[in-house]
Length: 358
Image 1 (spheres, rainbow, N blue to C red):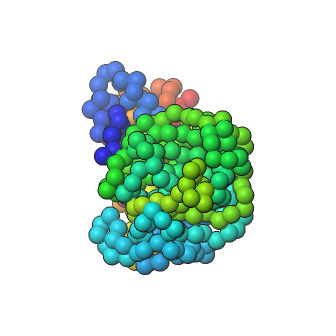
Image 2 (image 1 turned 30 degrees about the horizontal axis):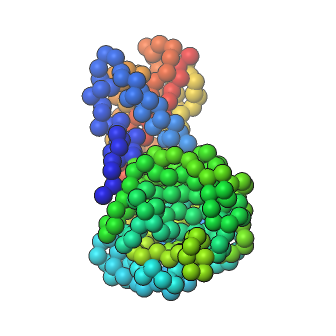
Image 3 (image 1 turned 45 degrees about the vertical axis):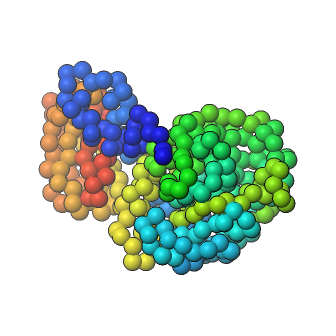
């Protein structure tokens, strides 16, 4: 079982709206203000979750890439049921000589930052689920998997042999067990700047290893297998199941993870459910003195209204959306300071935008 921390759903958007009563109090608790500020920072930088997506293997009867890049994989693993019980919608690995192999192309071996997302069920802990440059007896590229205690490790190697002197790693505080599906996201920006998400929760963790810069041996990425010390042939195989593998040559942020957890990548599958839309609200000018123009970038159909709140969470103005692509909002009566424009997108995803009044 995953051990949940303070923010049980990893979504600061959800956290903010579930704690809205705090925002109505005369004095806003600092941790709620922090969540609101972070939400606004994330929303103001929103982008398509598919930006810099190299490949996405949804596993629908095969290992084809549906990102549009055509990086189709080949698999020696066995098609099986996914976490919903749907047949031929995940791959099962038996712990021996089975893997999914991506094309051996240099563009699939990017420099930092990079990110990976997938669903997995481990039958045995202490195995790696994904490696983007598999080389026997060598730590190269990046890889992610579980340790024997159920923590998740995220790593990259400098080309040395398989010991801690030749890798940089982060190990999660949260843990998983066997026999249960979980969603995993690994983000590597630098040796001391990595994120691990388990079931959409930032899993925290600590850094270890003393390796140098990222190194590639020039081998293809593989799913279900990785370099391992004291294993036959210098590699270790996974026992379990994997589904929905996606890889980016950029760093995902918390809003990206939120979208992925809501099914945003499904837009790439023909006949899938509607995705979380790419949605942004622009405010100009900002800072402003007398009025602002609020414009929609994306499909704003379904927005019923917005609110302007102060840093204590008090609602100062209700704004009814008229269905147009932009509206003007008067700032008459607002003192100099920072405010927040908040609401929910047509898909129900909370958004927030900071406003400065001068």
